[in-house]
Amino acid sequence: MAVEIILFLVAAAFVAGYIDAVAGGGGLITIPALLIAGVEPLTALGTNKVQSLFGSGSATIAYAAKGHMDLKAQLPAALLSFGGAALGALAAKIVPTAILETALPFLLIAVAIFFALKPGLSDVDVERRISPLLFTLTFVPLIGAYDGLFGPGTGSFFMLAFVTLAGYGVLKATAHTKLLNFASNLGGFAVFALAGAVLWKIGLAMGVAQFIGARLGAMTAMRFGSKIIRPLLVVVCLALALKLLWQ
Image (tube, rainbow, N blue to C red; front, side):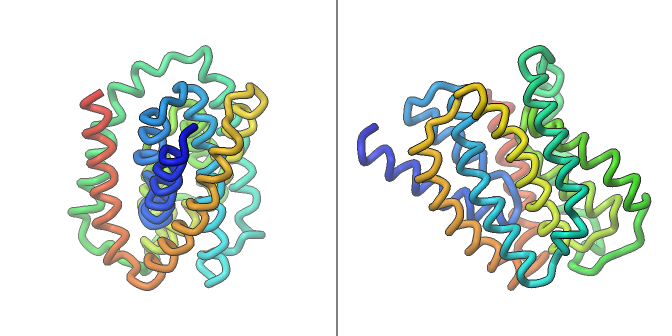
């Protein structure tokens, strides 16, 4: 692969890492970049999982270091997200995704409208709607499985679940989303890696850029909180929805 193409992919990964750490949707940038670079679609998905691990891992470390989550307490949820994603990735070969492809843009538009118009959304926690145990046993593995099976908008769906059901403030929801997204990325990556659908050198080079971009993005999110997370989340959801509708 030519040097200029590698530099293009690294730059795309840096920008994706920054945006993903704040509002999710980094794959909206990296997957098209890999396809533009001439990478075969299945390999592009596998390579994207490699580099996205660096971004979600970097953001998770940054949020945890500032006390926005307890990694030890969230380990069971992370394991369920990992397991759900692995099962989803295994099922991707046999489960038709046509319904998801049709419905997803409209679901993302609904998420965008919610975060744009819902009054009272801030970084302050509110009352839970379901118990932590029920949330962990149901929504976490389900969204993880979606990530392994299909993927686009996973971070947005985790955010929506944390805010509406777990009662988390926007910044706290973002922090926990990154952890569960890291776990689901790891589950999907394991399946792609076993299938040999990974360009390791490209994935690792992009991963370094993702790590740096995600750290800067997490710092921005922690500094400005919901003031930047909400509008960027709305933009990312709408951009992803428009991209899917165009396809």
